[in-house]
Image 1 (cartoon, each protein chain N blue to C red):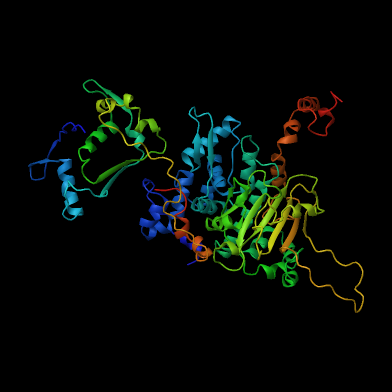
Image 2: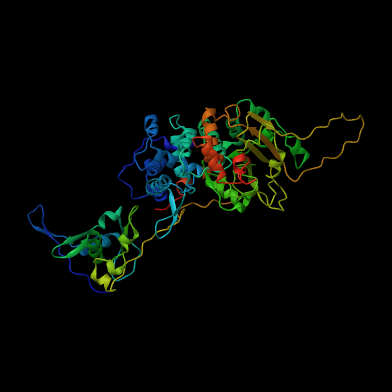
Length: 161
Length: 431
């Protein structure tokens, strides 16, 4: 995979007057060192952190810039998050009213040149997720009417997330 | 704590917190979140902050009321009008209706109100208020084209059952209600006494033949808070129905289900879910003036739980449970609740005559014929006029003719559909 363009981080003045540099990779590394014992970026882990962006379709508006041409917040966010792709960190973009094309446009229509050239690819959206993923099983001969009519049982039936 | 107190906790959900939903929210949430999960479901259903205050309920919009009714009555759209299409799409977009499929051009969408008991429970919190008039809200929608009404008033049967269930659940403060209490809330006061004291029309054993309905179903309990529409008539089998009970669902039978429109399954012996413990109300709704106060016994025969078309019991079922079969003759002009009784001997028995041994039937059934959608028949009905209109609106034909302004236009319209009805206008041009 081609390396991501370097990200420039603004310097912020701290309370003591000194400059503070926020580096996403560095800060995430510190967090994962804290979350995972003996964390090693070269090893595989299940996701230790999930970033969730709700109503993400509002990020997908494509804008025009005199210098950079077409861009969207979604595209920029994707680029920024790719910096940490080797860390056990997964991002989820949720949308209820968005169009599928906004998140997985045809590669030729994406704002990213490397997507257009086929050097990178997008994860297809997860839709048609089904129901009852977290449901407790009703067991014939064991489960009672009192149990299935409780909120504890009822709340786990239906749509996921 | 009783079941209903679980959601009586003041609403404490941050309305901006929409990142998680039902199951995950419930599992991971603290006690306050767990207790207010039904309120949260209500917020998702209405797409706005939820309240059970009467003023709030009274001000619900038509779409919001439709959202509430849809999740409990499995309402379907016929998609013939733009309004219906708009309503259907709005329900999908904002009110938790599920879109199963759309064609590439977005010309048609297949949408359903699937079984989600938590949403149904939230809807119940609104519907139990006197400010939510279910029959009147249904009528508002039925007066406009677009909602699939069903020819035989299944919708009215489901509405009556749902209102009876809600009344019993509210009175007993429990989601699980005894079958006897359901009957008491369904039928007009006085009628249940006859019904509960009646003997079966047919019985498998002499013991069952001698027991009254009340005695027979003494331990039986119902749990449902919504209806779903079945898509395959083979689902009317106890192998599947115990699972339906687990979801708190009763069912409108699949299209072309011969002889039966609605099934309300319940547990017969005790509270443990299992196939062998499932019995049911088998209900047929007739919105046809042919069926008046005099019972048509053949309609009960068509609801035989052993019949292939119904299939409630397996063909080789050795221990069938007693069932309750009901016909709702909604268009009858005379209100009545008639329990069908076994034929009695006309001649007195001769002294010393040999008594024939008891001849058992294949199963035990109680048959009840209920005439007219009226408050003299059904306890949930408060206003006969609304139900009369609901029945009228359930008939596409002859409404399509009779809604025309003048007789000549009516006849011209009938004439455009020749040989399909008894009115002379369907025939006179060619015979």
